Amino acid sequence: MQLSDFDFDLPEALIATRPARPRSSARLLVAQAGGIEDRIVRDLCDFLRPGDRLVLNDTKVIPARLSGLRRRSSAQGDTEAKIEVTLLEPRADGCWAALVKPLKKLREGEVVRFSDALSAVLEAREDGQALLRFNLEGDDFDAALNAAGAMPLPPYIAAKRAADAQDHTDYQTVWAENSGAVAAPTASLHFDQPLLQALRDHGVQFSHVTLHVGAGTFLPVKVEDVTTHKMHGEWGQVSETAAAEIAATKAAGGRVIPVGTTALRLIETAARGGAIAPYEGVTDIFIYPGFQFHVTDALMTNFHLPKSTLMMLVSALMGQDRIRAIYDHALAQEYRFFSYGDASLLIPA
Figure (cartoon, rainbow, N blue to C red):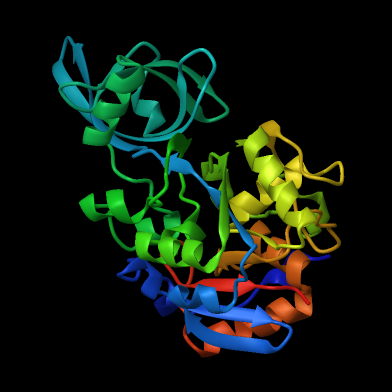
């Protein structure tokens, strides 16, 4: 299985830099046994049945991009350097792992000030990353970070425009609850309260799980034999309640449909024994063609990067030839791609 098997040509014009408004007005490609239909997200009730269960990732994206100043005094006078920081993950000792540019301008023990309230000291370097200790903790840290930070837009959006105040709303799901992600579960960005209510009225049920999406989700696959790729790890939790709800839906003959690849990867991690069970810990599950799904019956997801692990995941669910046809259709119909783009509902035969 070669990396080139998951490649395709994507016109630059199809990369979305802003989401549809309202959220549920985005286009929806529905692929099922009867073929492919071009619809919009608020048509979901036409394809979901009473008793189906949507599994939603309730992680909350933190405004992980920070700009600050490092000041230094020397015999030649005072100097300062602009320092850009992208937070990656909190560590057990209270530090944050972060990407710092330029890291060479910062010495261990030096302070970077991001606002009047927020600053951090460089405690150590580790594998090209910085370990930063902030001056605040808990709610005080969250408030100062929300005031000083920008949303960590994916590289393919950030290359086209800077993050702004609108992204604080746009790049967050309406049910976001547990802070810790540095990337959004983007299929979930298509849901608004009117759509959620319509689905409830239709008899669709919901379960919440948490997977804190890390920056590793954007790492490219660098090996030609994809089966040798090593996935990044991300922390997730499937509660006893969520596991019981999912199991009950399966037992009753309903379909379990994760919204987004993050929710899918987490519930399949929790079901590695053959049936869903509560789970808490790091998952580095890698799903590619040949994978046996234990709980997933269908998937709602956005359109993914060529040669990415997510292309491999949807190919595992639908089959490589089928995904090729689906993406050919999406390209021909000019669906919008990636995090702020349009959605697909993939229902395997």
